[in-house]
Length: 151
Image 1 (cartoon, rainbow, N blue to C red):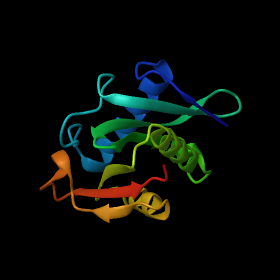
Image 2: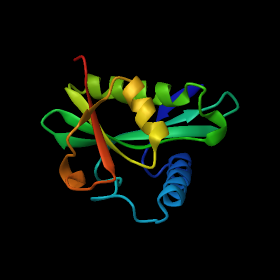
Image 3: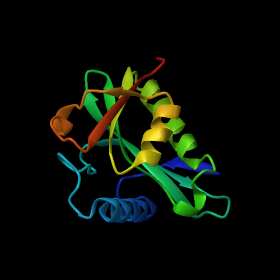
């Protein structure tokens, strides 16, 4: 497995984000379940894609800079056939390492109450529940987390 930093518009990144959004739409019953502005090429500081040995793109994740040394994890996704194999953790570690290398002090993220698997994953990965931040304030289905990074 290899993880590569790619441009937001890269075809593998776009395909994985499309699959992620389709899965989220199915879980929440709507294609418009994201509070706030959706991530874009303009506001993503970094985006990574995980590739299997044969070259198939199987996972992704990105970072949006929030300011004051804090970033937000966005568009984390792993293909269902690869879940439980450590791909998500490798992507998350790549994001954390990149953010730490930029001097960021911490990462935040939001996930929804219909994603208990994501909540378990982030909690096991050292993220702690925090009050909802930014566009997620007042959104009862949102759960926000944060992890401080070693710089």
